[in-house]
Structures are given as C-alpha cells and as structure tokens.
Length: 478
Image (cartoon, rainbow, N blue to C red; front, side):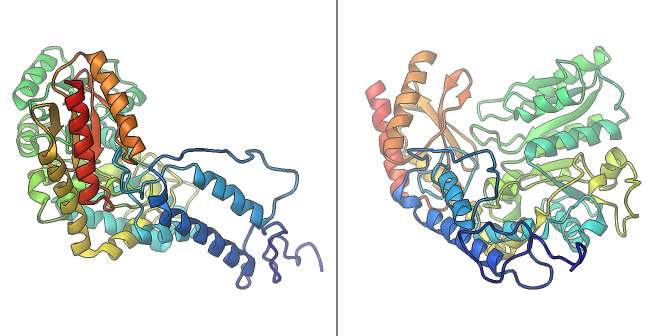
C-alpha cells in the first residue's frame, strides 16, 4: 500500500480506551471509536447537568488539568478525565439558584445542535463552504426581522456576541451616513447604555468623547428632551451624530428606553436609530410581552441575543437591519478567492467576521424545539418571577430598581457607599451558603445586588428564600 493509499488517522474497528483516539473520523464508514467517545462524553455532560442540585452555582473547588500536550496523544479515557476536571470546576447555570447573570441553562436541542455544528465544521464565510446553512441563516434572520417589526427589506447577520453586533451596527450607520472618514462623529446613548458602545467607538477610531451619554429618568429611561438639547449643542460645534442608540433592557435594571419617541425623534432629525436589544428585544417574539417594546420595528438596526434568555448555547447574537443592503455596502470586499455567491451574497460580506461557525443551527433547532408556546412561556414566566420577587421585597428597607423585564437590583435605602458595599459583600456570601447566587453591580454610585430571573428551574420556594434573606439582611443593616 502506497502513502497515498494508506488511511492514517481514522477510527479503529476495535476501540480501546487505552489507545489514543484517532484525530479524524473515517470518511469511509462509521467510526466506532468516535461514536463511543462522543457517547461517553455526552453521558458525562448529562450527569453534570443532572447533578446541579447537589452543588451550588459556583464550584467549591476548581482544579486545572495539564494544559500542555504530552509527547504522545493520550487515550480516550484520559481525555474524558480531563473533561471531567474542567466540568467539575465550571459555573453551573442549571442550578435553580443561578440568578446572578444573563446566562440561563442551555436548551437541550441547542446542545445537540452545537455538537452537530462542530462535526459539520462548515464555514459561514461563503456559500460554497456552507450551502444549506447559509440559506438557513439568511431565512432565519429574515424571520427574526419580521417578528421584531422590521420591513420586508430587512435582513441580518449573526455575530459572536452583542458587543460585536453593536459594533457592526455602528459601522453600518457611519458608512450609510457618509461619515466613514470623519473622526469627529458622535454616538448618543443613555447613561445606562452597555459598555460595548465605549469599546465600539474606540475601535472605530473616533475621538475620546465620541460616546456621549444622556441622563435617564427615575425609571432608567433615556430622556428625549435632554437628547434634543445635546444634539443642538453638537450641531453648533459642527459635530455630526452617526447614531442614536436606544437600549431595550439595561444591564442592571432592565429598563427600556422610549423606543417610539426616539424613533420619531430620529426620523425628524434624520438620524440613524440603533436599538441595543441584546437583553430585551427577544421579548418581541411573544404577543404577551411584545407591547413592552412598542416602536422597536421603527429602528434602523437592532441587536438581539437569544442566548441571554432562551438558553441558546453561546454564542447567539444577531444584528438585524431595516435595509439588508446596508450590510454589504459597509463590509463587502468581493472575496476574490471565492466563487461568486448564489444568493444575496456571502456571509463574510455582511459583517466584520469572516470565518464563522454554523451558530444558526443551534438557534434554529432551539426555536423548533420550543415552538410558539414554549417561547411565550419562557418570556412571560421570566417576567412573572421578577414581579413575584419584587412584591416580596420590603420597600421600607430596600431601594429596588427594576424595569418591565426580568432583571431587578436592590440595596439598603440608607447608608454610605462604603457601608452598602460591605453589606452587598456580606449578603452575597450569605446567599451563596444557601446556594443562591446574585451579582454585585455598581449603579448610580452604589453597589447593588442584582437578580436575573430568567432561570426556568427557579421555583417559588427559591424566590421566597431569596426575598426573606434580602429583607432580613436589610433589617440587620438598618
């Protein structure tokens, strides 16, 4: 047999856990070693998920396995042991007390789709590298755009997280308005907007004060009258505005800016309106919660992150635009090393990312698994949990800040910033001993304890225990 005829690096017909796993699966038939290895790894994962109730959200011990490769490849059993070490030290989003961040348990169909995504190893850079997945991605983005109220001309592109989606949106806005070579351009957003905007203007080479923030009202919403005043000042300084960014779901309290008023304002002033809906835009998918986002479909672009509530495995973020041609206008280079696209253009011509995995697969399959009723249930129950917790907190002791979504933050009504910081540390630790995990963001100069009520495993008993502990801690502080 010649070197060309040999079949190195394929699965053995007699699998052994003491031998190295073949680096590549055979293209000539079923690889029993790979099948067994994936089955064993899946079993470990299922046990880890199922044992969540035995542990807290955070591991008690995290031991890192050997990092560097050995001289020879290790056996499949040792690979599985290495995986177990990492799993045992991982954050556990499936625990009912995991309430600190926007990281829900993974949707089961999405887990499977993530595995298939890895196995297909298709590249959404170009159509010939991902023929069926490119079409699926295009159609799914169109469906999302339609459900969020954008016009028939709309389209979108997935990205690796909301930060990149927001950056893509601002690049598109700048190009569309002819400001690509103007470093004096400004982005206007609320004081509670996401930190990714500050990163974006830095990456775009704008001036240090390119992101200018507008104060929020008592409900955490951008004040449109102050936005008008700031715009007048900028125009007197000959500084153009490349975009107004409305936030649909602020990071600490889940507030939603007045979307319709901002849309009317931007149309009147001929400004680009981008909605950072990484947290809240997903609520537009349910008829019950969609009224919370009235005016969303009037935006020029929207960021939406299904990963933050639906349980689509990371990462899952979309940038949707009212006019799909603006994406290629801003990013297309021609991809001279690829065959021409068969449809509306290569995926790598729609955003900053070239090589992209088939993340659309886990979003699509997850939505198929949930169905319309499942989607509505996830969204409405998250809001109901927030409402339940909020009504259980003692407003005579705690300053409670929330919005209409599933986020809530609280702190003692009285006390200095340093005293309240110490309270937040002590109370968070007390909660962790009860296997309840909240985060400690700084908001309006004070440390708060924040609960994100998107975990479908969280029951009424957990919310009751959480409220009792927070009330008791605030009472002791007073």
